[in-house]
Image 1: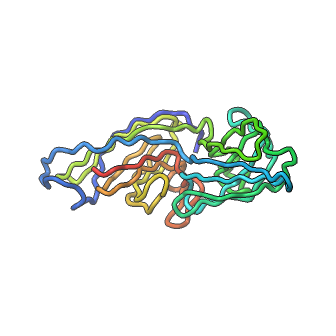
Image 2: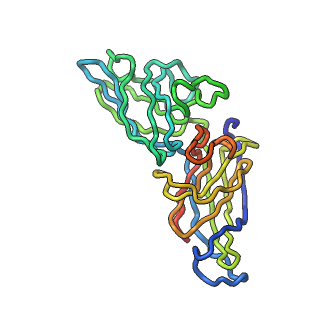
Image 3: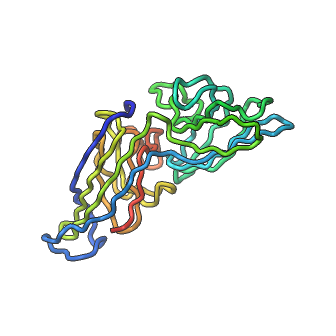
Length: 269
């Protein structure tokens, strides 16, 4: 997949197996019912807490984040650079962090190197798409971070920071849904920004939410810089993946490019 930077506008009518899932007449002339408008936000996101032990000089990072590939491993580094600009070499490396089965992580890891000067002010925390062992391997999808935060100047032994999607990867958009109980179809109008021109993405409607990803409910057609979707009356979320359908794996065999880049919770209609 190429870098992000394009704009998409898609409107699709999707025939779905939704018998019994909507309300209203079953007549083929039923008027579509306007559904929710969903804001699609860039993920992953979360928080981090940095702390250093003044006696042992051990530096730790506690991460709480969501919007990752379920059960995926990720390299975590602190580099002598800032999120905006050229990436520097790692100054501190950590054991890989692992997302749970819903694409979230809550873990604390300690750096491999001591930090005798305390929390490294003026550097950045980088969370990568793949584990350390896979960084730099072809096709190199993990060297550029998927999430990042700048460490402020501080003399404290403990600070909290916000983890943001990596600068430059800023897709955003919205989706508007309307359900026709007669034809059992859902029309989805998707407006997206910040996607790579001509890039291909898998898109799903899944059970759960952006913070707690669930099982796939409907696998949608993969699209070029866009998406289409199907919906039931329960609360779902609409997900756009980084990779194409052939790149994201199947079943429990998740590939790194399964990771979400856009997500929005869907309320029932």
